[in-house]
Length: 403
Image (cartoon, one colour):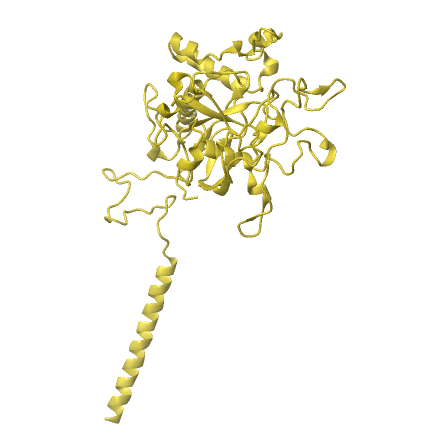
């Protein structure tokens, strides 16, 4: 009986040891087994067990991450306070401060330049009907004035080589949107061809599932534009703390560079005062009596050039004075008159210019005083109108991410 008990005890210990080893092996296996991801989905479905990429099975293309689009800068999203931090000198009260969250997105490093628009015109003229080309032409007569001699800019500003990298002007909101659509198609066609993907005849849709093409280029929302102009990533320290806000896309209350060899130079291209666009001969401080090159002046902390001054920039939003009260606090956008219909503004009775076809523009220009350089200020213009002070840049979502 004694021997039997000792024998059973040995079996029990051996069994327990075996179970422990098996449990450890199972635990190690579980720890080492990685969950599937977008870039490494594995060879079979976790829902059905069916194999991917069989001859007749579901095809899962290789994917690394969203390709980099030309001229785009990644703008890391987050919480911010939108709204004007300047004194409301015109008493518009149309952009009071409120807290929102902006998802990560991309934005053009620079304004779209004359050379980019001439490239666009070249391909439109070659590939489209004459009326499409004519509709894409900027209105160069925006430079004309009955009481000023700006006539040379009508012929020279868009096409003369010396102005190649100056921002395009004289484009309407509608034309800017058409450019975004064209740019999306052209960039994605090149990306697909570089990846060895057959592009549909006639420029058809390249499947997003391929993972090699980009989401659409588009105009930024007003909230995206304002957030990118603030560039408060440069004021952050520690854990979700920011040292200060900004009146302009740079630190401080001054408009001149306080540091180094550029000390005293203006940080943007704007109208310094009545009749003063550049300073005096021999020391032209901002050096730009009209627009300046798209890489002029220091970039902000996101790496974006001329988010204040040079030219105002179209954004996507329809203008409403109370947008700040109505839009979502996550990725806000006003696309139409929802909850604030145009008939409430009496445009038909000449009381107002507001309807569903006026769009916001932001940033200040070479012809504006410093007040309009503050990211929170906003103005509006009919979407089929253009001026010598409004240009644009493109933006794009960052797909496949939750931040």
